Length: 272
Image 1 (cartoon, rainbow, N blue to C red):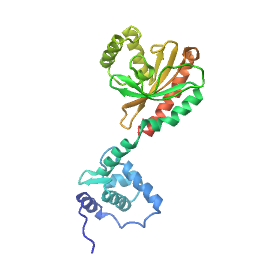
Image 2 (image 1 turned 180 degrees about the horizontal axis):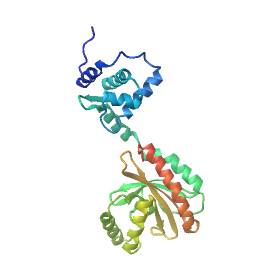
Image 3 (image 1 turned 180 degrees about the vertical axis):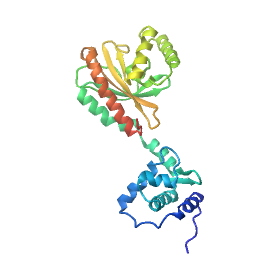
Image 4 (image 1 turned 135 degrees about the vertical axis):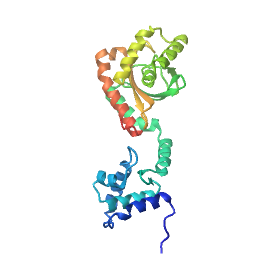
């Protein structure tokens, strides 16, 4: 005779499901797997009772209970009486592992290459490194434009398009402090009121510009990359000579850069 389950969550779940009718015959393996994933995804907004879970999935109580019980056995779910099913510790463990295994440079590379091919301009990837933008990747454009940036360079946040994209979510008081610091260390002079007004517009639009602020005759368009939690984790920029970067073209490029940044964000787990 089989011993009773030792997992208290499993015991509680089995008790609630005891009133359900006998389980139906198991579905095909792939269908059962997909249903199990549907059960997990149904917990996204918080704990769910057996009755509500069955309704959401369009399944019988007995089938829903069988799927949920199997997931509790594997620690993907837990069960609390009067509250219901919710995410279990296994999902937390896997989430941390996935985050550690996800390398933003590796994930972003195909999107950078595609952006460089379609625009024919230089594409950068960078992250926030203290009070500077650290350039992690660079793909040179096809045009004969010399852009001095290199992988590993650290540039001012407030005078580069990529740096501004990393700052979009920061509070204005942080903008002011970084702006003053960059101005004191040699960034091109600009009136703060003008700069802040642009930043507020960038924050609303989701993209930023470098209007020859970091390097003479070089302009760029940038957009932030977000991680699973929605926070900005990196940024992408497209840079070229000012002669190829009219105001109209920069406005058009903004859409492409945001699309590329959004694609990378989704691969990092951002649901948008």
